[in-house]
Length: 268
Ligand SMILES: NC(=O)c1ccc[n+]([C@@H]2O[C@H](COP(=O)([O-])OP(=O)(O)OC[C@H]3O[C@@H](n4cnc5c(N)ncnc54)[C@H](O)[C@@H]3O)[C@@H](O)[C@H]2O)c1
Image (cartoon, rainbow, N blue to C red):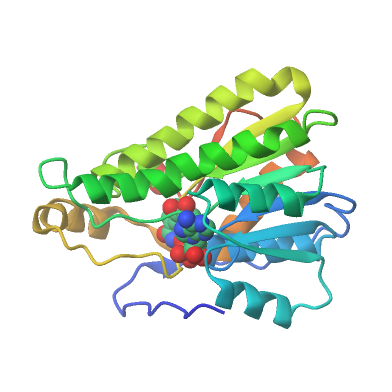
C-alpha cells in the first residue's frame, strides 16, 4: 500500500468515523474506479468490493495495484495499470470492463503547487488539467455508452477547490471547477437514460496527495486561510462512504449534486 502521510502535531482534529458495510449493496454490479491504488480511490474500491461489487481498479501505479490484489484475493478486483490521459489507457479500461458497467468513480487526480495565475507555467496547468479534467472527461465518454442500456451512477471527485478559490492554486481550482461543469452537464444530458452523475467535494483528507507549496505567493495568501478555517482532517474511508452513497441506489433521487464531505468547512 502507499506510504501513509505524516500528520503534523498541530493539525486539526480527525473526524471520527467507523465504517459500517451494507452487505450486498453492489452485488452483481461492475464499477470502474480510477485512482484505485491510493487514498480515496483505494478506500472506495475496498468499500464497493466488500459490498459485493466487481471493481475495475484503475491506476498508474502497478506496484500499488499489485499490493491491493495480493492483500485481497477474496475480492472481485480487476486491476488495470494505465494512464487515463492516454487513448491507450482508456482503451484498456473499456476492454477490462467487458461490456456492461453500472458505476464509475472518477477519482484519479493531482494537486498543484499553489501557483497563482501570474506564476503558473503552461506545463503545470496542462499537467493538472490533463488528469483532473481530461481524464474525467475521456473516461466518462468511453464508458457512458456501456451504461445506456440499464442506467448507472457516476461520481466525480471534486474538492473544496470546486466551490471557491482558497483551497489550491489556479490550476487545481480551475480543474476542480471544471469537474463541477462536467458533472452537471452529464446529469442533465443523461437523466432520461437513468444515468445519474454527482460530485463529491472533500475537504482535507489524509492521503499522499498533498504537495509542497512551492509558490511563495500562494503559500503567503493561502497558508493562513487554510490554517484558520480547516475544521478537521478526514480519513479516506469517510469520503469513500459519501462516494458509495452517491454511487448506490440509496441516492436514486439525487443527480447533478455537488455533495460536500468536508467536516463543515464549506459552511464557514
Ligand atoms: N486528499 C485530499 O485532501 C483531497 C481533498 C479534496 C479532493 N481530493 C481529490 O481526491 C482525489 C483522490 O485524491 P487522493 O487524495 O486520494 O490522492 P492519492 O494521491 O492518494 O491518489 C490519487 C491516485 O490517482 C492516481 N493517478 C494519478 N494520475 C493518474 C493517471 N494519469 N492515470 C491513472 N491514475 C492516476 C495516482 O497514481 C494515485 O494512486 C483527487 O481527485 C483529489 O483531487 C483529495
